[in-house]
Image (cartoon, rainbow, N blue to C red; front, side, top):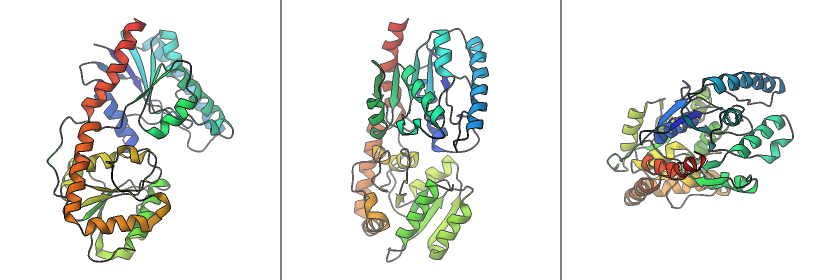
Length: 358
């Protein structure tokens, strides 16, 4: 059994605030431990500066220094590996590389990004620290082809870059949905990119003809703005609020298809969840998002709301096409995006590395 230290500087897996980032961190812990290995969440210190605040960065560095000294002394003696999830310029790992150097254990990252453009400006110091943390990693597991571009460009020495596709924390799929019922959208209601997706969705809905219904699962600080966007459609749109995973699974089984533009999504766990249930997806062809979508016809960003509307209209009018695409999507997720595959990819890379380091 291998004992693994796990750390997520941007958001702890124990955070009470739902997000795709939190869910992926939890999924990774589950996958790493799936063969009987032990994973410790060794720190919940959040190193995150959203606005490029120099004073805040200074305070976070001081907190990280103290946490580093604590962990050098407190990390269990049989810890053999450190894994950091989501190191980037707003949330650099200021702890892991230093602890690993002091304790002489391998350091590994998952879903890290390099942003050379941020080495100047308000995040310059944090961006440099994120780069240095990347350089310290023996292996970086990347989730999307878009992340690989800069990781390859700035690869340090003989560092290994290994694909580990985003995945669901399950081993088997639920029964295939009939792809009948209202359209479904799922998204947190936050200002910024999430609200931009809702705005694009609302614009697309204005182009639809005939009878249609849309249910929206999600909540958050921008709910008022989303309600205002959807008010024009009256009873055609129903806001369901935030749902737990069981309720959301039931909704997937009773919907026609998922529609979500995916503005600046890293990849989007909802796309995997819907496809696993056998729902076709309408989304824009975007970096990151395309890495988790079954091969199909997705409108480009340049096509805007009208492109989304055309694709929506096609699926609304063709039940056989919905069922065919849903079946293909379900097969795609089964082959590429379930936990057993993630566990296998991770340990096939790590166990040989640990044998060499021993």
